[in-house]
Image (cartoon, rainbow, N blue to C red; front, side):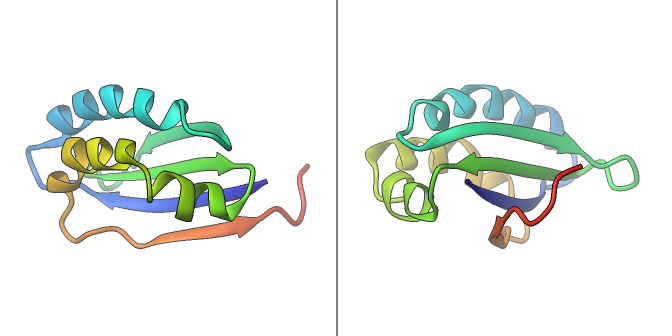
Length: 98
């Protein structure tokens, strides 16, 4: 399992619209091969900042499968215009769970 991590900085005043769009976008990603689960969390201290965590079976399911799919274009159209700056996406392998 690979964990995708992205801090999403949403343009001020666009938080509600972003959350509505994300409710649609979650269905796009949830049907992708290799998708495990997703959580979207909103920061208490910085309400325009969200933490996106997505579990994938392999790194390639995200970087090749999802990003190379027609579904990714729908995801991009729904969400990318909300970000400023555009998020850095990183991938992690689990080391320890308690």
